[in-house]
Image 1 (cartoon, rainbow, N blue to C red):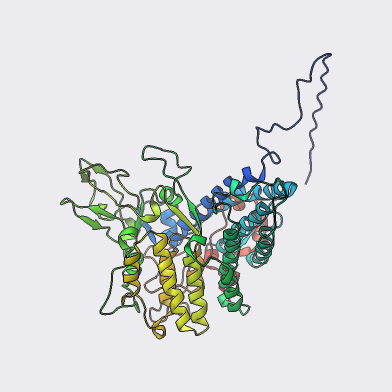
Image 2: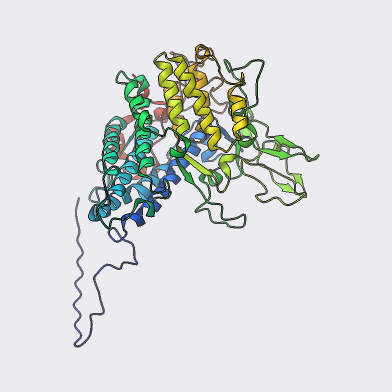
Length: 543
């Protein structure tokens, strides 16, 4: 690669005058060296949350948590399992362009003042971002991504990246346990995620270790004890979770910079699926049931409702992804003079509408807990840790411990959502939840985790590890499959999934790399240009 160096030398001399041209850095103008660690951290956290939760939105469409009103666009393509170079792009861009390139400069700035806690946080964020993207895409630039002299960085396989991620997390834990140098900025100054708590950051690091190590359930190297060891130091209670709090600046504020990512991403086109509703209502093969069934208290908080002409709140109709409906519908709708533009208004939008209803005003949608403008981003929670524990204990044939963790995971998610304690306990003691250790199944654990991790990119890791609702041959099998009722959508992208045994296994490589770095992409995987590439398992998704 040719390197061209342009040197501009200005020599201006004025007698008895100060130089009018100062080559020193302007502290009021950002560049690669001016911002301090505490100034860099807030935008790093915000940009990471954007990319992470936007990946979760895409996974929600792919994993049949959400449907979308009919229009041949990126979201509709994800509902037909078509991850392409266009719709896969934003999580990639949000990480590489907006987040990752700023982490090493933050660490360098922190090193200069002995701000070890910022160094530790920087390493966690680097590990978290690369770990998330490697699980979604299977391969990505790592070693060369930040080398300004290399315009076409090589791709590394996710197995290599995971090794680097675990090393970073171990280093971060050491840094966060150090005492900072005198004069170093307190972590609380820039930490808008965990409020400056080094304990929460350390627990986050261990939680990520547990998450990544548990992805290896198909590999001979899977070590359940290593997962449990990480869990022992991860969040143990809800207050130790890493939850991103968004801000509702008011119904008349049009800026999207602070409002919840899922409020922004869902827009007015997302719709709830029959599968998601069936999981919430225990309407699936092998679901817990009995004489003392209790409705899940999250139901009306997660499923939007609208008022009918009589003023009665009615739950949204449900989109069955195996029906013909997703091929051409449901159709988007609008209201004029209190009348819907079409009958598909029964499929209620996920955003609250109106945001601030006045007395007597018709409620067009109650919205969802996740789509409040000032909602929460559940990035890594105690609930997730408990479901990982339940899975590991189940695999170790410890049904009593698995049942305890399974119930704790449900309780944690409901508590984070603000469900009243009495309702939680009534539900957990009912026959709607497994009460006998020997009756607990892996399917019941994973379906509750699916609910607790709504709209999280981690759901895609789980459904792949568990082979959807397929048997060992890859065919849909409701008697042995884990995610009961989760089948191919009626409008599946047949070019990528020509066989009944084909399931989504990775995101497509984004257009940025296809357009400008295709040689390195194909060198890493020659199949990347094939339509069936997205049904090719990534490294931990195969023995």
